[in-house]
Every structure is written in structure tokens, then in C-alpha cells.
Length: 521
Image (cartoon, one colour):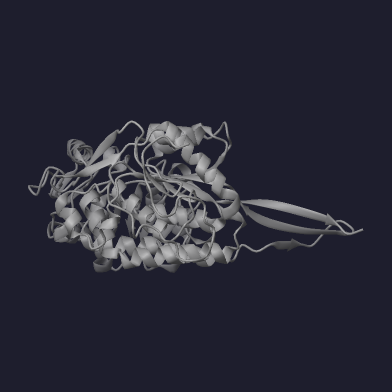
């Protein structure tokens, strides 16, 4: 049995059919968590959920424990969420494992129907989902709306891809033998997601796993659980069968530990820091789990003298300050060829100083950072860089918009030994330094344990080819910033991660290859 208090829905057992699910339309809102002002702003108040979602039911903590969520823009309370525990995390494995066999045996096109319905419901509730996200995460509302579209796109893509992992035949090297390669779903998949993209990081993982035939356990960040629970509400309404999609809020050490120990959890997909990724890597060894790790980044932004300077500056602003700098793809080190160095610094600093700062609902360029720790990190990196000899061009301190706001900041002449050139920034602080040759800049760009993405600006096609080859990164963006989306293999090398998300590779991560050899004699 499950240890906790359920808020029942109309679907409390496995229902594997391709009809529209009854979902939560008639359920009571006894677990409505949000502050009165936000709750009243929602068009669909059923999206306000504070309990975990396990086996098709809303599950309260067995001991009544909760954790609080606040608006990073002003520190105001948004509400309390049930803090599920390790016993409930273990029971969720039972539910997902029980559901797996039937879910995996469905025709792929039938699994796709559930995903298409989930996709449609997300788009129908786009404004509410974006509002919840902005209030709990802080990002500008236009960025939040964009993330909902981005999140939904993965579900649509993998609903289509569900029908494509066909059996492959092999030309036999043995007499009278016929050979095939099958792709089969791994089993239960645990998905551990961060706060900076609280919807898209769930759907990018979950849609691929569900399309492959896996059942999933989701542990969202404690900073942004309401977005995850709203997605669970819509998954329930889409009719996803009980046990197929589960969301467990709570403390990571309590929720994730049972998942790492249980051999029935066959795959773990994590987006977050390299430090935690290493820990999960070690914990997965005893049960030899499939791992997909999307970890830290320390992206170089390289501009050669032949680049279109105005375009490079425009793209540099986008690469640095999207999501208020709280993005693993964010450019951290700006390496500019010396002939255009001063012009780039001047233009970049001038445009940075014009960026607006404020609460996400005001739709500024820069919203609040997630918490006080993030602000303190910006302060520490700026202080260290200045002490090492860097020059402050603009910003450099907390913004008067509130406790979690930091001014968009540009540092020039940053020496290689400064911490900001060694550590991920995850905030609105840009560090710039000159370089003199192609060999030098490639060496400096690769001088890091990270390898997620590199940005390259040049008009020389041969240099584009050489640099793209030599940069030790999983992704290279040439003369542009935006590269992500459902059809691309997202991921890094070195200590930026393992495996890929998105594209067909994202679905394959949740499948196992089976070789079948038949004798026809």
C-alpha cells in the first residue's frame, strides 16, 4: 500500500485504453497550494497542486511534512508542498514497475495518442503554466511562455517518434540463420530535473521515455515543484494510465536514494550540477543503471576579427543573459581577437547597461536570480576578478529591484587565473579577455573540465571547419546563439555529461538492444 493521504481522482487503477481520460475535471481542490493572488489569476485552477502524484492519485506526505516555495522576485510565499519521503519513493517504484509491462506492450501508436493529448492540453493551458513558472522561478514572462512551447514540442516530437524504432534485419554470416535487432524499453526510468527550466527539462526526458515504452518517476527541484505538478495534472487529464507518470516532490536525498538502490529502476536521467552528476554516477554502479547526465557548462564565446561585429555583439547578449544568465548553455568566457577587442567591449558593455531588470511579470530583460546563494556567487566572482586585475565596465553589484537581483555586469581584461574563467557563473556576469591567434584561443577554450557548448563567430569557412573540429564540446554554435530544439542531440563531453537528449538519440537512451538469431533448418 501507499503511505500517505490520497486525494482521489476518477482514475485510481490502471486503465490502458486509447480513449480520452477522465482526468481531474470533477476532482475537488482540497490540496490547492498557491497563494491567493496567484490562484485567482489562473484560468484553470485545477493546475494548482501541492501533493505528489503517484499511481494516478494525489499523494500527501505520510507524516504531513511540507516545504515552502517563495517568489524569488520579492520573497513572498507561494505556498507549501508535500514533502514525500523515502518509503513513498519506494512505493512509487512499485507502481511504475507494475504499470510497465502493460504500458510497454501497447502499440506505439496507442502510446502516441496519450502523448498527443498531453501536448494539446499543455498548449491549451500555456498562459497558466507560464504564470506559475514565472512566479516560482522568476524568469521573464515572455521567456516562460517560450519555454512552454519548447516543452510541448518535445512531447509532440516523441509522440511521432514512438512509431519509428523498427526492427532491423542483419545480413546473416551463418548458414540457415536469420538475424534481427530489436529495440525494447528499458523499464522504470527516474528523471531528476532542475529549477531553471522546470517544464522543458521534464518533458524532454519524460516524453522520450514514455514514447519508448518506459514508465517514469520524476523528482522536480524543491524550488519549482508547482510547474511539475501542473504537468502531472495535465498528464492525468490526458488519461495517462496510473503508474506510468509519477511526480514526487521532496528532499532529493530522500526521494532519489531509493531509486538509485533499486535494480528495477533501469535508467536515470539527470540535469544539474557536475558535482551531483558525479555522485549519481557512483551510486548507479551497484545496479549498473543506464545514465543520461546533462551537467555543468563553461561555454566560451569566441569572436575573430573577421566576424560581423554588430551581429556578434547581439548574439553575445543573447548567449549571456537569457534566463538571467541561469542557463547551462550561457556563455561564460568571452574571448575576442585583439584587433576588434576594444570595439567589442565598448558595444557589449553599452548594450548590457541598457538591459532592463525587474520582476518576471513585468517582462524585463533580466529577472531575479533563484536564491541568495546565486547572488552571493556573482558578488564573489566579480570581487575575485577585480582583485586579479580585471576592469569593471558596467554593473558589478546587487540591483535595487530586490534581494535576489544582480546588475547585468561586464568585466574586461579578465586574467586566466580569475575564478570566473574557471567556474560556471550561472548569473548575469560576463567576463571578456583578448586573444592573438587561433591556436591560442582553441587551447584556452578547451582548458576546462566542461564541454557542453562553444560559440564561434568568424566568416572564414576553413576556420569554421578547423575550430568546430578542435573545440572539445558536444555542441558548437557558429555565428548564432540559438541551437536547441526537439530535433537536435543535446549534450556535452568531458564532465558536462553522458548521452544525449532530444532527436532520436533521446528515445534510444531509454531502450535496450536485443539481438535475435533464428535457425530455419
